[in-house]
Amino acid sequence: MANPPKWLSELADAVAGEILPIDILAPVGCHYWTNGALWEVTLFVSKTEMQGGPSDGQLSWSRFTFDILSLHSLFDSISSLHWQALPFDEDDDFGAHLLCEGICAGHSVSLRVLSRPPEQFGVGRSVDSYGQKFNDEW
Image (cartoon, rainbow, N blue to C red; front, top):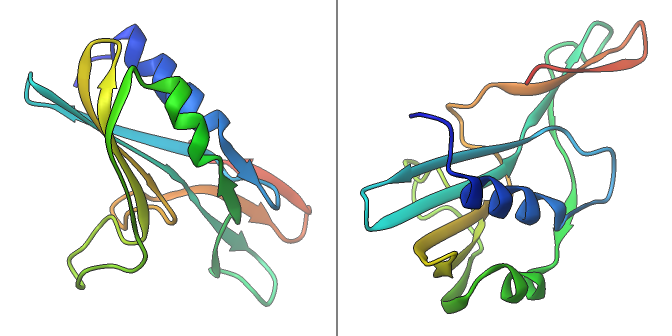
């Protein structure tokens, strides 16, 4: 898909700004899709992989909170707001997430903020155990 329209980039950046880290936040990913009438937007914080040392290959996830009330200022109107606490089944790529549906910049939007990244997205950050530094992969 081509670069997102300006209003969508602004929405994604604003939503990402409401992801409040509890520890050092890994890179935030955004996936979007549209059928012309509806824009589906998904934000998630990437996985971190340890490299080297006794924890080599271990994955971890950034801990964060999210300011749900901020969504009112980012959308023209909100028609529904839901929290899914657990995956529905083993094929549920979204898992635990917040779902907000409404109108943004005149467009119908279904926005998800995931508690963990979908499996198909690789590691966004690695930690060099020996050099003790973070490396953003994307």
